[in-house]
Image (tube, rainbow, N blue to C red; front, side, top):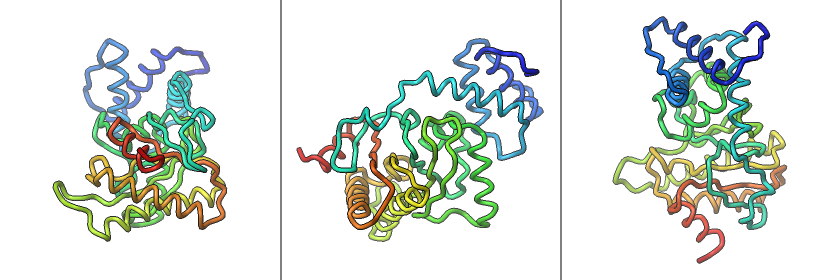
Length: 265
């Protein structure tokens, strides 16, 4: 923007206009800020990993970082439900100022392309910025195949309050089906892979979402049992840089399940 200081509304207009011009489409821009913000997120969601200007990234980073700093951020020392190295916290994972957060990704590892979708994959990519999709794309191009269920990859977190995002692909369960032993082993592998990659990168704090329990339909109770057992076993059996492993839950149902399993009734 020519080195001129601009406000959030001007930044938003610039980002939207850039992405619309890039698509070479006629898209009606709404007037109110909230609708414009949703349009920006939608345009980011549907954008494939392509080269983008440094000017765009500079404005985007200033805009998203300001949004992050205006949120009610949570730090490790703010969490008071603790069992050894394990912590339980209920809230939005993109407001956790920790070393790493875990993203429940799909096998393409590029984020969710559905505009404004409320899955964690979409929320993390939308808050981090377009560089996150490009980083994942580079990983996938080098890998040459879809990400395997149970594996994990690490990237920078860009405009999130965390330092890193660890992306893992959990098992998908058909609706009204019961996970088989292989599904359970695959889910445990997700947690093990994330813990290992966190340790390899000297992370001291890592926050897990409830992998596979959203659109992938893994039953919450069983998923929580696997998650807790796998993390406890890993921490007991391995030397690790990790000092804090956080189970981040969203909603009373999952919170109550984890609290009961970790701390008793």
